[in-house]
Amino acid sequence: MNNGIKYTQRKSESQGDWSLTNKFCCIILTTAMTKSQAASAQTFGEFFRQKRISLGFTLRSFCERYNYDPGNISRLERNILSPTIDKQKLEGYATALKIPRDSEEWTIFFDLAHAAKGRVPEDILSSKRARRFLPLLFRTARGQRLSKKKLQELVDLINSS
Image (cartoon, rainbow, N blue to C red; front, side, top):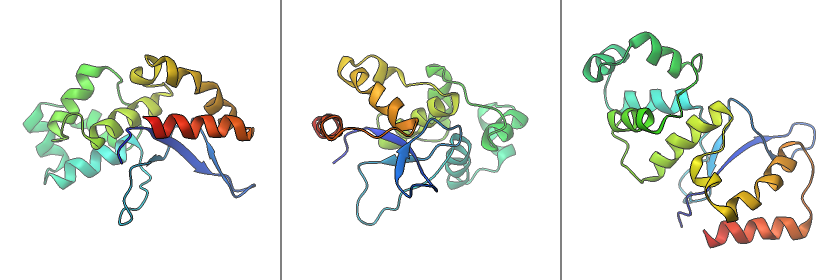
């Protein structure tokens, strides 16, 4: 079931458990994975490069076709230049990369851009219900454990989306 919620996570080496983190090189794990899918760990740049290559474009041919600066796209793909979070510009990139609008890839693309900037996506901020749970995520990112009650509330939020 695709509920459209994405998580940034890393494995804690000291505790051996998973904790949420607001890290530049975040990992996006989707809750809508099938048994045959593996969790993919990607930065915005890695995702961008993978999509470009899967379309059969070299960096230069992609930039020539869509009138992008090859130096900037190269820096984006190598995570030297952080992506914009301007909706119109991201939509332009997503369209050039043939990412279907309103698909899971579209959501991941925008989530990765926001995560790289350390920002919460607008769709989360505009949801009163989702905003209630941001403190839980922040606490967890700081390594503090959730109470069973708060964890159940979060699970209920995820399941109702």
